[in-house]
Length: 183
Image (tube, rainbow, N blue to C red; front, side):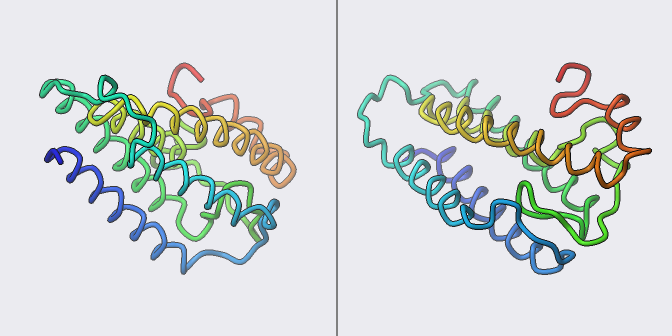
């Protein structure tokens, strides 16, 4: 096993432990798709295991370039840093995708100043970094989870428009959903 695999693997484990620990102090609410939460988590775990165990054998998809490993590692660090920064700013308003909080606040500071869903952006960026540094197999996870995040963001924005009918449309016009200046 290569050092970059160990660093990124251990980093993801630490990130998710932090993420779960931070979820203990959030506002109450309800998950819109709560009955599917177990399915979503199970699907993601199975997908990641398939990618990690490389059940589909093709070593040509594994990255063998120190330069790409370094670039991927830098992208991965930036992505996780953005997700953690956004998580700190959203505070107790954070929830699983498409959850609805009791008495939500519209957070527009920190990374939310330019991106409406910076946690999604950060996690996807970290996954792209993992793809570049480790293996193109991770591109499958980027596409699947990216589609899920876009679906979640669209649904969350409908809810936020209902909750903040006067301020959210203006906020939406002044920011991008996932990628600053583009999308």
